[in-house]
Image (cartoon, rainbow over the protein chains, first blue to last red):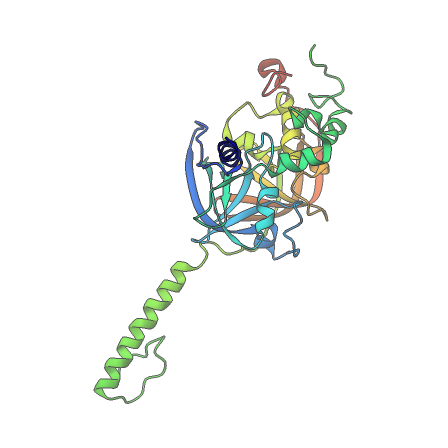
Amino acid sequence: MRKLALAVVLALAAPSAHAAEPWGLKDEKLVSFKGKVVDVLCTLKGDCPADCGAGKRQLGLVSTEGKLFTASKSNTLFAGAARDLLPWCGKTIEIDGLLIENPAMPILMVQGIRETPDKEFAPTDQFEKDWTAANGKADEWWRADPTVKATLAPNGILGRKDLKWPK
Amino acid sequence: MPAKHPIAGPSRAIGGDERKRMTKLSQFRILALAAALAAAPVAAAQEPRRVTIAGEVSDSWCTVSGLMFARGTAHHQCAIWCALGGIPVAIRSADGALYILLKLGDDENSAANPRIARMATHEVVVEGELLERDGVNYLLVDRIADDKGVITMTHEEHGIQPFGN
């Protein structure tokens, strides 16, 4: 019985298989590719702090074909992927996710990251983990966040003092 | 007199076997050069171009994904959520072009920067450097020449994006 319980616990604790999930967006493509994690400003201008900007700069991937992709979105709602890529700064990893090939610009949502093919893709949820560690658990980080509240406070959710919502 | 090969170097009197070897070597060098060029980055860093861009500040994900109506008062709150969540912020010009903000003055923090978030859905005119790479415009802003605030009224028609509150 104890062996069975242990097996269940281990099964639940093991990393789950992860594959990119479609969102049904226009022009979206499921993608998986290898790339070197880069600081975008460093790649474009040669302005390169040692730590890829410590999570304060936009990060991206340079694919093996030399194409630069800014990692714009993670699995956490309303959150980017810089914190997920930061530990891999300067290293080559494999990602899966969605590439939206909009005529205005392509945009990459990174859903999973793995270092080597023998590992499962780890979901990109570092923003949520970091936020929870700093602020405590919340159902919707975006409404509970103190900086969001402070930014919205002067002008309200419409961005103008002269407008009220709901009316 | 045979033409000099640009890769094989200056011509000189050589024997038949050596000539064959040199020809092979030249072919190999050409193939190696072609392979190296093919493996090189598609687009290396480019020289920046001075630009003045006018448009609305908004997050790139909502604008590009088409998940919601991402303009003006209806999207103001959501644009702040995304900016503070670290999603790249862009300026959308009147012709629909997008310019990702990587720098604002001396401030190189482009992920979750409250200063950038405070500009969400503002109509601005900025001056700076434009770098283009792989279909994306990246903007390094030197100066905000004008900030009109939020002037595009969209909430009456579209409500509050994306949840209604």
